[in-house]
Length: 195
Image (cartoon, rainbow, N blue to C red):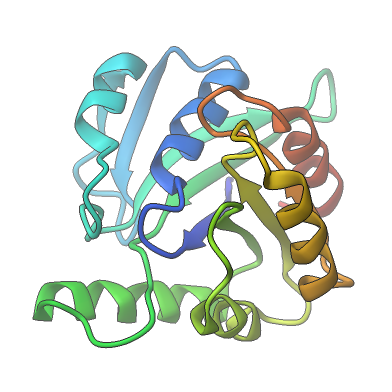
């Protein structure tokens, strides 16, 4: 049985690229994609094709949660998890009913989640919605803030601000593009996520 790890955040924080490249870091070359709500639409897709079809610079392209199964650990300490790329949640009013429904689906999943990776763009000041996303997480859930895009210049100071803002929650500096910080994320999941 796999544990769900929700990957949440604002539009264009890098959630989809993080999920795909983190899966590659864990050794996946092809992904079994499934609609996370009911496991339907399960299909295998090569990783490079998934990147082309799933990653976009446009906001609100992920309107359904999609799950990717990965395995963490080694030997007799293996842990299977489903990384669930959730639709983005943002401040303000939504441009469409479909986007508002997607926001609602993410928030509903968040309340019940046992594990959450909250992706924030380290180059953009966190918004009100980032604090609200953290507040939705159950106190018992494994939760970490993933400060993404740390391959860009000037993000060191932003990561320090995030660590202050989200203390005592862990803030892990990563680059979804280059894989920087992925070992820290794998270690966090292995230590805090339970089947």
